[in-house]
Amino acid sequence: MSFCCGASMIGTKGSIRHLRTQIHNVPILFCPVCHRIEVHHLVEDEFEILAEYAQGDGATEVDFEDYSDAPATDALFENCVNQEDEEPLALVTHQIDMALDLLRVAKALDDVEWEHQLKNRLRVMSGRRDKLRRKKTPGGYR
Image 1 (spheres, one colour):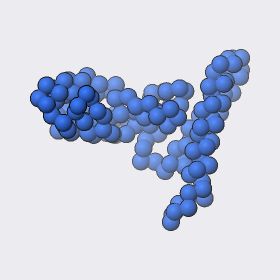
Image 2 (cartoon, rainbow, N blue to C red):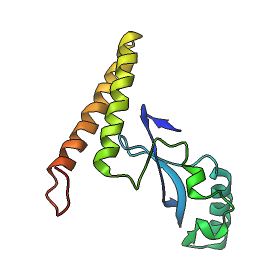
Image 3 (cartoon, rainbow, N blue to C red):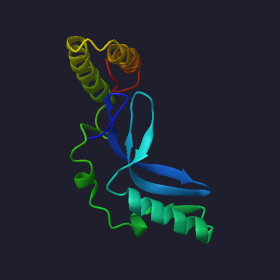
């Protein structure tokens, strides 16, 4: 499980640009608070090698899955707290719950800086939760 700015990162696959090459279907971890993206640590070396070869060959687009021996997606993301295919409102609510638990720990430790970071994160996540609740689409959230 990876954390970024205290929030647990979400496991998914995405496209990453490396210089002039777009590499698709890369296992990544995504922070729902600050939107930082990082290549999953189990495929980081493969990604770097593929990116270098693709760049050397002048390829503009490459599919990571065509060249990778990476484990199946389920195995890669089994230790992630959340995955992208989860319902967005449930995902955000779970992230808020975890941040509240961490806030309790920060207060017990008298860590004022950490408390401030967690309160900031809670503000962002609460805003996202409210937007999801207000969504007015068929089968949307209430």
